[in-house]
Image 1 (cartoon, rainbow, N blue to C red):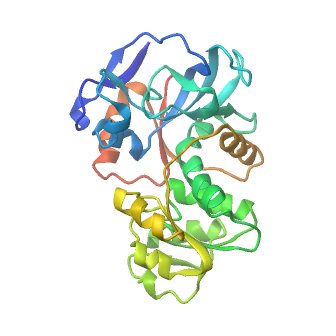
Image 2 (image 1 turned 90 degrees about the vertical axis):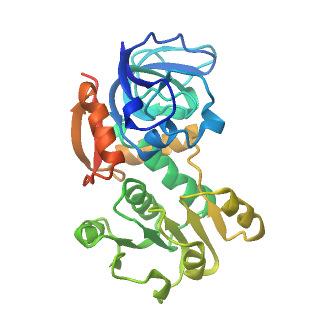
Image 3 (image 1 turned 180 degrees about the vertical axis):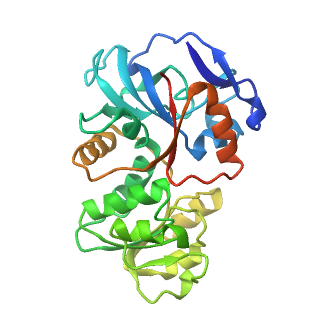
Length: 310
């Protein structure tokens, strides 16, 4: 079997496509033959060593978080899945490995794929959908009639947030680039403003939740746009923001945290056609390093970059 690995933390030059032997899944774990993997910024952030307090110093390390595929085998205590099940989900940050022909994942980090959702589409749901859910459902506890503002509403997390907010009956406004405003409107975002030409701090409307999925909004701006009882969801958490959040309960730094109920909720929404992310480019595993490197260096796609293992 092959997967993308690296033998030290660092830049794109550390990635290599190498042979590996898939270990036997442990207690609560599932082995999955990967069909497709989706590329996320977290993949190169982990490789660069930004999270090495979590990922540790053991090498080689495997790259990739989000995947879809078919269960090969399950470890002790696994009851939700069996060999042959079509699934999607995320590898744990400390393990990675989605950008490979097979991966080991926690039972609580995957869900069954609906037959109405392709393997390619399912691979894209994990990190963006979980992050959107963590903010809007877990932290903001949105409900029907709430008014939500999503900064970066046409990015992967932003689009997931728009669709999840609307699924819960919320009204959604947002900011996007001029080129993506039409797409935002098609998703039901109204009004949508151009973030390059609009001073968001001067918006007159106030919101029950402001979600900065682009990571470009200041805390002061986000808090200033809130109604009484509203919360500012910050996708770019720092130690300082966590400390500040202890004293201001309206500030909610968001860390992508998977759970079985979230993955099942995403699976249900996708199966009902209420959650979809556009796919911009699909490449074979042999070309994945080049695509990851290009995206890391700033290449823009109007959708997800996906890697096929077949």
